[in-house]
Length: 113
Length: 118
Image 1 (cartoon, rainbow over the protein chains, first blue to last red):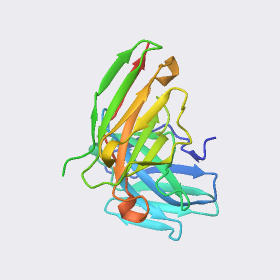
Image 2: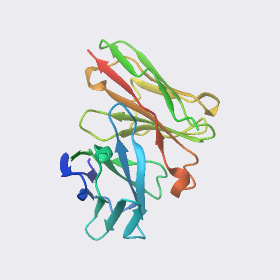
Image 3: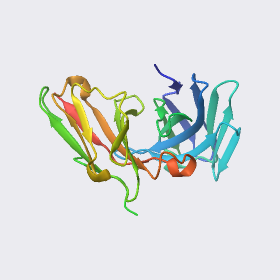
């Protein structure tokens, strides 16, 4: 069963504009959420995370928003840069399952000049 | 600091053959994970080690897949016999300590091994 869903397989955005990636989850027991970024032929790299006790976490150009009532989180990238072109995975974890991440299918982001 | 190392990077085999993948985690990382990523999907956890003990292998197809982590460092994942549906990228990840949570639990991934079963 797919407990973490990224319904947009791809996103194209102009350089300098905002990229918004969305993620929905079904398991209310998830309490920690992460975003990973993946370039071709490389493994995913950790980008940013958020605990369920927060609704926003910011790190430079990257901000993650969490709406627990809607079971929805989003990643904002402002401003988007060509180097941001990659696949972005949303992942979620339960407190009683340390380390076991459930991943979404990913969103391919292409930043155009 | 060296990252997670994996080998080989690519492997092509015929169905019913066996194959093994190797992973060397980041030095000092107690927790090691093997994931399977099928094309178009996110990574799926196969097995998780804490030092040299298995803590979660609930999604490992044990009739054909096996994994070990000798001396709590390097790990190997084996498939015998391989099926067509095993074609995927096999990712190894490690984290400092899964029991700590937060930043210490951040998983660092290797580049993966792309397996093609013909």
